[in-house]
Image (cartoon, rainbow over all chains, first blue to last red; front, side, top):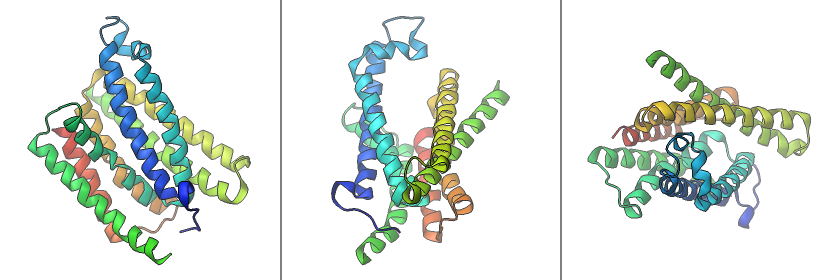
Length: 134
Length: 114
């Protein structure tokens, strides 16, 4: 792994920033799309009606931030490590839907979530060892 | 219909994987040459184009199919991208990384099926 900057420019921090932005914009999109679904019967399926919600515009800003920080991450971290780790959103999204939106999580889904967590730990462990040495 | 859906799902998946590889290649070259280099711009544009194709094909699929049908294929992208990074970008792929990527893919597929 290449020399990496510390502080805000730390690529691992940027990876987290990217993930958190994705998590928040997915939740905002869901809220925004639901709020505006009944504005126009014929247009709602195109997704264009969602533009009436300010939440959707905020989601778009977060989308751009997440893309920029992701590009920054790719400068420093191998894709075969960064991409699997970025899928931590697939755990965080169902958990937030459960906690914030009060959605139900089936046993099969809990099993899937735990598989992802074990996989993430396997990918992250050699990274943690590598970082300690630096 | 199912035929078309299958092909479109494949197109979306390939476009997504290719997009990530292009973006990674662009950012990798940029550390040596800066962002204005021709190669970097070419890879960045190819990456953004691939991602755009992925975005619209996925939207089209979602308009006709359930998310729980479309998303499991996205789950496969984790293991495919890890393998592609090893083959195309010559990244070092350990056994532990491969098993980790496989578990994440399997987990995402389970989460999105239920």
